[in-house]
Length: 364
Image 1 (cartoon, rainbow, N blue to C red):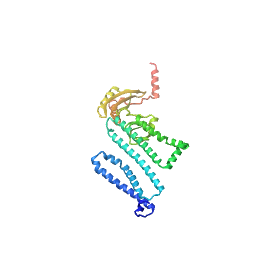
Image 2 (cartoon, rainbow, N blue to C red):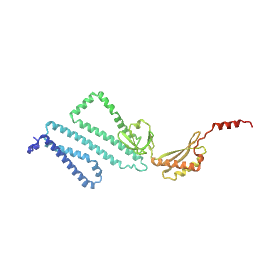
Image 3 (cartoon, rainbow, N blue to C red):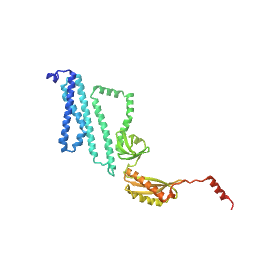
Image 4 (cartoon, rainbow, N blue to C red):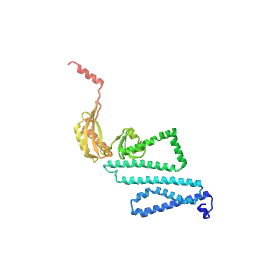
């Protein structure tokens, strides 16, 4: 005999169960509102560090209070022995999931507080990008691991699921092979994420060139990388790509870059004067970091020679702007001061060449 019948309350069993569950949910919502108000008005002013924690634990606190309220109100519901056993297993599974959720939230809060000491917007942010990349990738991997463990233990609290799992592992037949093949891309990307966190071929903020696309690593998830292209597009790349395909990383060891400017000119170009003008050009802009400025003749074809200007900058963005600036100034200089040095096509008319050849062989 349940408690409500003891005090003389009479109603259909299903209605009583619904009323008890609704009362439990209402009580949980009220208790959550009161606890949140207490944390924000009393504890948060005294301990400012609790502010972010209170915000990030909002949902998990509500889930915990809801489980507690349902467990306290359950004796009021007139449940059959079978329903009582089902609810008991449901509460056990919910409690296991709650423990896993608390662990994930605690891990994320810990990683976030640790990563606050690193500044990604500083000029020399190589060490910060290394640390933050490792933190984010490892955090996601740990979150997935804890979630899988908690979900596994929660499901094992039900006899039917436990027996199904045992029989599935015992058979390990074609279904097991198919499941393994289906999960291979996901597992491959998870393993690749762990490799990236440890070896770090790429980091947050790195400048990459992939399949002709130039961009910055904006986000690294547990399965893919988001690269922000210079024209604001987003390039989505699976993690396994970085271990199977060559790519360019312009900021692998330092944020400083050498920018390359190629100029094609006629053979009559005064290389020395252009080299001196290049030095004057880079001194006009703060984009140049003052470390490297070089002009070399790197190739010569039958029509033009190739001039390569190397200039250094503090970051990839400044290197791009500096390259554009230098290219513009060198072209203006050649057009204004050395027009004969601009590329030109040379041709020969067949009739004119034959006439000249006849004259050269004529006697006297």
